[in-house]
Image (cartoon, rainbow, N blue to C red):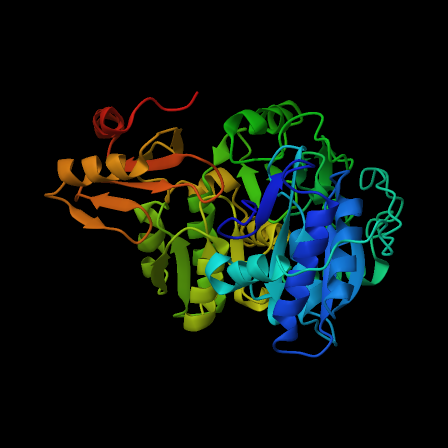
Length: 469
């Protein structure tokens, strides 16, 4: 189908993904889960995209045709769906979130998980779903499943700080809020916080954040899956600019940006400067190790060397993994890591089914600020010890040729191929890898000094090509 990516199903609607295809995929998912359980129960949620309700209806018809029972929980964040699968008294056998995460509005997709919120990736079940979908019967002319959703502006005008936003499942939302509250230790007093949910599902958390005593200043807080103001991808600096300006104009002490399905968070400090997600990984790893002495902390291989150094200094065991939530979660479960973080802004918690949660990451950043009495810039200042390029994208026609050229040019270095190619020298290193979601190769380079960074970046890019604008 061409829709099945490394971690999920994703494509443009309706040419690549539409209701008949969603029906077949639902059928395939039901058959996969049916191999281990009779009449498996599958929790289904959607993000704010206007194509979500029809795709969900067709997908649930496919589930029913394949012998599964669908439980529709309506609009939610992806982490909330994980909780609905794994966190209630009667866990479900699977979950499906209709979302395209940070992609533009013309996209949609499906993220899958098994019981206990264990992710399904291309090598752990997606290939089987793809093959089983091909055996589905003809889709019906009309969808019997009727989500009955009216996507409605939520969050900014909630009268009660923890009221269930319109359109959300009250039991799931309130249950998830109770789950999040377990992570609250001490939030700063009278903190002014700027928030940009990018018109995505992060808007459902505004009432909860206000209930912590925060003074919120919000832009793009209403649900609107057309994403009218900017792309719901906080990893791109241009999408963070409005939040950075809001922090400065309102004299806020913190800025928070969410992606479309609110499983990623990016932070801005009180000066209006974005904080690298690997800096947050190091900070939260350090803080959680105070409560869980000697535990392992996982980080993805694009992250700064400072992450491992900070974790070791805090008495923890730093572990390195390839990029991707399915790989991170599998390793965390195997080792029992207390926490993990990715450069894209995914943060994983052992006490959250080893799953990622943007709002729990927010709570932990607030805990760090509240317990220390320090602003975010001061908390990360000792961690920002190296110069970094950030992630730089390149469009290349022959990826294999590029990787071979790079390996030959740096054959005197320490090289590994865990994910793409990582080239390491004592004073600088870089990772070059193919994107799992876009036709790009991505470069992350770090050096001991700014001067060395610029020199080596020029050297490496001459081997790859012209970076994307």
